[in-house]
Image 1 (cartoon, rainbow, N blue to C red):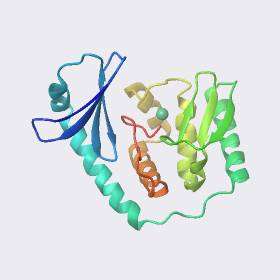
Image 2: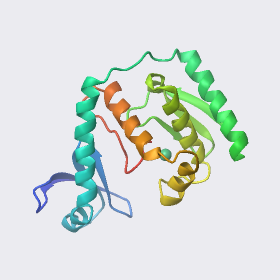
Image 3: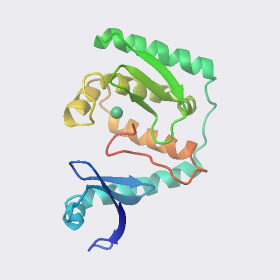
Length: 197
Ligand SMILES: [Zn+2]
């Protein structure tokens, strides 16, 4: 079920009711979506509690959208080159992190750069060919770390920061590239909660 509303502070939002336990907030192209457990009654308090996060996020998206119109994409990697690079990176990480069973899949994805399934299957968005190499390395490292922790919680970011102390900057840069490579599409979703994937 869906409904629309405007918060006391004047922020328009859409509410999606689902069979979930915990409410969460999402921002798609800067507009607020509340994903709520069925029967959830108090979106106002939820918005109030996360107001700073929402405002900060909207500002960031606005800024990135502006930047994405000026910045040009570089030359994309050839498909074979990209696949080989990712295969090598995952292999290197698997040795360092100690996981064994994995395989790589490549497909066009509409909402994220990459994901890692429970069975060790990495799915990489073919759009990653547009990314500069330092971001490809970061995305692969990030996905590999999901071997230890599936969620984007503080433990996960602590692991990331051991190698990438500047991960917040890199996540932002990834969001910028997301906007740049999806300029023509209407339903862009740069982030889920904190991470791009
Ligand atoms: Zn992630």
